[in-house]
Amino acid sequence: MRRKYGFDPYLALIVAVAQMVIAKGASWGQRFVREPLDPYAYALLLIGPLAILAHRRFPLLSTAVALAACDLYLIGGYAYGPSFISPGVLLFLLVVRGRRLTAWFMAAMTLLSFLCYAWWVGNRDVFHNVWILTVILLLMVVAELIRIVKERRAERERVAEEEARRQASEERLTMAQELHDVLAHNISLIHVQASTALHLIDANPEQARSALATIKTASKEVLGEMRSVLNVLREGAPRSPTAGLDRLDDLIERSGLPVKLKRVGSRPLPSQVERAAYRIVQESLTNAARHAPGAEVSVRLEYGERELAVLVSDSGATKPAVLSESGSGNGIPGMRERASALGGTLVAGPSDGGFQVEARLPLPEETS
Image (cartoon, rainbow, N blue to C red; front, side, top):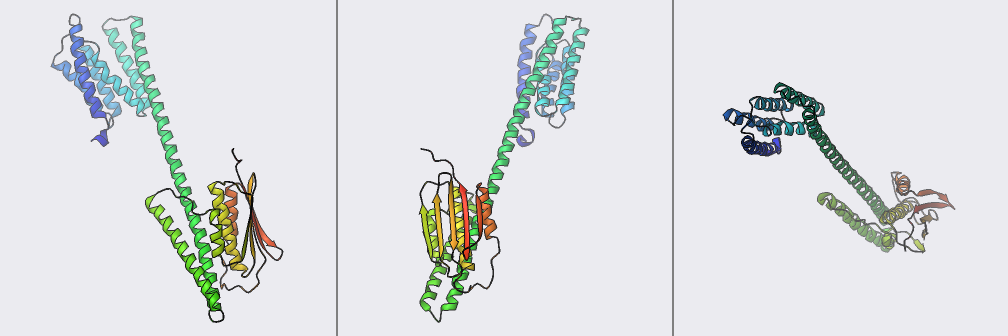
């Protein structure tokens, strides 16, 4: 019942008690000029609270019934005051629940009925009529202000909810991209090293054993990454980036390529920039292992005041590729998307017989 009717039963009870108590006091105070309360008067005073209970299903009808009961109470000659509460509450509810046209129409009807009653009993004082108009207008204006506040609060909550959904979608997209990059790199590395091991297992068992050890390490990492992402999806906890430039040495060691790493300068980096730089180096090493086996690779990181420059170049293949399949072709576009998402640039293409990837990622100004 609470879910269906909200606070209406409590409001109806409060209004019923208030009208009865006020009616007692008003009747005693106006005992020489107004009629004493009787069962008919009490019945009319209870109609308004009952109308509040039916207001959600029958807003116009319940308001009209409460107003009619109020008018009959006045016509019966009973004390002024208590009968006005129910119509006022129902007009207020009409406004705050979004039925504004109905509310203003019923407010006009209320004003008209009160003015007609005043004319009928011979009270033709202009100030009395203005006072009635002022009270009704004040009630409607307050209701409109409360309605505006409620609508703005609901709009803020809706916007906040949409923003939360958008952030969750972006987080899921980022996680999917991270998982894709990890899988692509490690599966390609496993494929290369497995092909190398098969090729050399008879002629050079030691090198084949090294390739198998690399496969073991790469498969362990990819399983760890997948477990981490799946745990996040299961628990809904925030995910801390696992890819950072502090892991470049491990990445290079597992690449199976002769790689020279050089850092120029040093400064703290935002996590998004670190993750993007790491993934760009990772994808570049994957491409080198896939398309230029045996090539010498150099990785250069330049920490500038306004940007981080990432340069990965290889000398070109020195032996036939052992991969039987080409890649998906999404590596360079994916790297370019990462750089563009941060407002940076990425250029990739042949260079001096090999291949070069150059990315420039903007950095915020350092604060002292």
